[in-house]
Length: 382
Image (cartoon, rainbow, N blue to C red; front, side):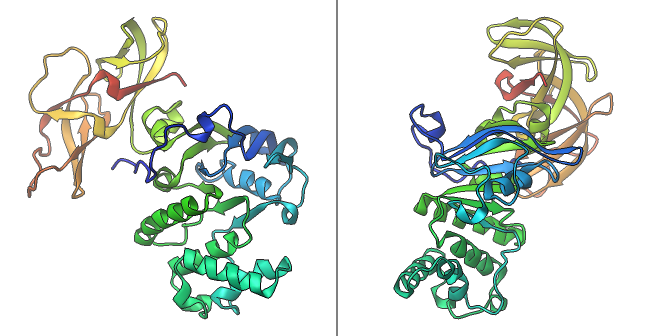
């Protein structure tokens, strides 16, 4: 099933595309090691005001360590962190214009909802009228006004998540850091809360930086995503850029489902590379913006939904694979087919079920041909 492609309205010029825009967060050549292991390895990135920015990667990739350095809970071994124009590299957490929302929510069990939200404001010495006004505003924002007097154990998981969010936002932080904020919720509630969180962030205009290992979560909620692996950032881009134009094999394989074929360039014409893939015995014509020399080793990435299945042999000599249907999964809106090629390679294909039917248009052990357009593939060099 393809990854969701975001819930945000498009803008004519995003902040990161505007040469006049000043980033609210600048991470410059930051490195952090624990013993011989580099958790964060020479990372640089910029995040702009009002972004919902996600650090995405598998466990141990360094994303949480980077978030903790932004919060001031860890100190970089080298490099610097600038927030709102001020070098915060060695500034303690309580002096940063930053708040952090933890995966566990860390609510005080003996306090009511409104007392939990007010806690940070009381610690800062806000007056009682200021606290009442701000707490009322936060309760309205997260739609928990009827639950103000309840304690955390009297709330659902989604309601506790909203209390934690309201408490994190009560002090008007310039930057909110979220560590796997939806990880404790079940699938259905998590999907619903994704939209709620995005709507709240857009209402406030606060910059959010979120750590997650969930690709769909990052794709749905983010303005931009940084994909991390082994302490390094492999690619930064909008959800659609990351999905449609992955920069490396790792990114292509990590985001959504993909078929990868290794080959060598044999020719080029009009922005289309001709690539021969010995392993599957196919010649592919793939659109690519830059010419590559003949013989250059490359990989071709093809998303399952961008391929067509037919039981009639195509006439084209390019972009054709012959195989046999080995597995079928009916998921309601789509059907997934695993097609076994003659060399036993399995290719995943996804077809949208546009018409109502009770049986698959294809069946097990049926011989089929897979085809795709040149612009539907991506050429990867690393």
